[in-house]
Image (cartoon, rainbow, N blue to C red; front, top):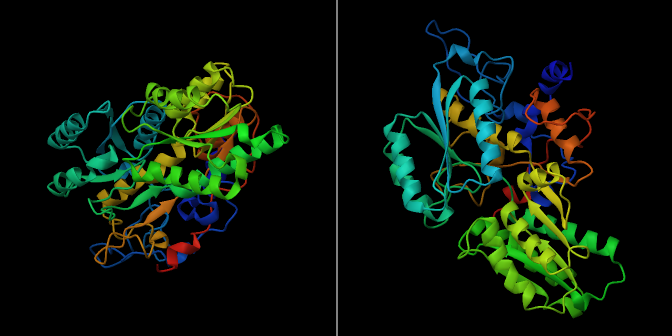
Length: 441
């Protein structure tokens, strides 16, 4: 019954994600800011052959024109089956829990938006294989591609996609940029620096609340890094800045970077990078772990637990699919928190944007106009947007409620929990566009 009620209630809520934002709150938290002015986000009205009313689109404005800040979100009042069935697919650089959750989410949204989903293909860390998979999908005539490559190969991907203008695409976990770091497509995701700050704030809060009398000369922090990836490294830069500003003087030298550029985007890679840090700093009795992705967090936590320091340590991650699996299996250790946006909600506007491009309702330069950053929009000839999504802090006590809320919110049965939750259980699904988006630097 709750799923039926959710369809009605969620119609007023779930699609407001398009107005979510960043700044001091872009990574998550209460996300209590108001929505952007959706009424101003319009496109040219497409008349019918008789010159009459506009063609209907999801989330149309009162005049029939598409609301470009909302167009990528599923609209239960729109008949997607009236359009041609499109073929969608997802190509990833790895196949960890987060990618697997995204795969499931894209399958569900594809079905709801009248698309045939061809599934996920993983290059398993091989960039040459990724390029092969991309070309194979293009040769097969796929209509929509969601891409999650190693960020360093976006400049190689761009010219290939340019040869297939009818194929619509979006990146997921990192913005698509050229060799100079300029956007080559709109982006929907997170402010990585702010997310890094929030991870560190959570670690400090835990430390100060749990061990308020600890000798900070024995407190250390492991920041899981990937120096070759600007988005991931931005989280670590935030960790360095936060540590410098907030750690006591006796702990200033106790922040250690565990660079996984050579060890990989895996649990083993995280373990291999973190283990030497733990084993060579035996004076540290309290470890704070900025995990940044689930696999690294799990690897670093394993290193700390193996050293017998799990009880006095705390790990956080930005993600949470792996942590949820661990909790579901009944395992609790010093991996305690996840800064999370449910992958099901994360995936919706990404594949919805591709659908809007394919239908001609929006273009990469016109979608999400409230989210165009004056300093980062793809250069003077483009107005690519960077729409930021809200997150919530999850721990063992609230994670089932959160995922059941996601199901209630979206009117689905994606997650296996049977707990009571209301639509207002989590504060909000929107935030303001950050102020720095409109301040020229």
